[in-house]
Image (cartoon, rainbow, N blue to C red; front, side):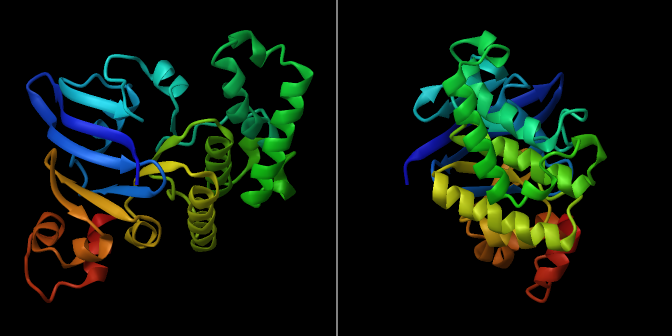
Length: 266
């Protein structure tokens, strides 16, 4: 697997508080990698440092072999890094179709910012085609012309994923993407995300508390605790790890169940 996102020696400090310390990790360009850990472990700080919304105190972030440590969020997006957030961030007065189309239109805005307002006919046709394809893939065609602000939280989450998939980003950072999803929506989200990575060759780095979802979609997980990576490997290996159990449960007893780990991590 080729390297997509590579973090080396990353440290994030807020004044005298160290949120992330000397973290090394790698996210392949064509698979899904998870980041899990207890609340307050430093997951959001690490994610924000990768996205450029928080300045790292030390270390480097590379995207497809390019050092992006010293550039801001907008230029990281131009380099191929996409992002969703814990709180849904859609244009509430626009339709589902229009929100998803904006994801693809960023491809033209990279070199010509004015193209968002004055797209060429060929660009408009391409955007319409990509938007229709992603809406169909994500099961959103039936609500494509509904205003985003009137959707349920779960539906808005799906629209946000569709917008990210419509974008030209080759590496996606997904922050708590299953938050607000019903059980049925979570199952559909899992299928859509897995199929999208296989079909489109995207790399995905996901922070998630739903252990079932992580186990279903992630080929590899990193476990963060008190700002340090304490484990990396498969989810099955993580569930058997005494170190991981200790960080979640405060126990290394072999009898601690996988369900306990899931509930405590939520």
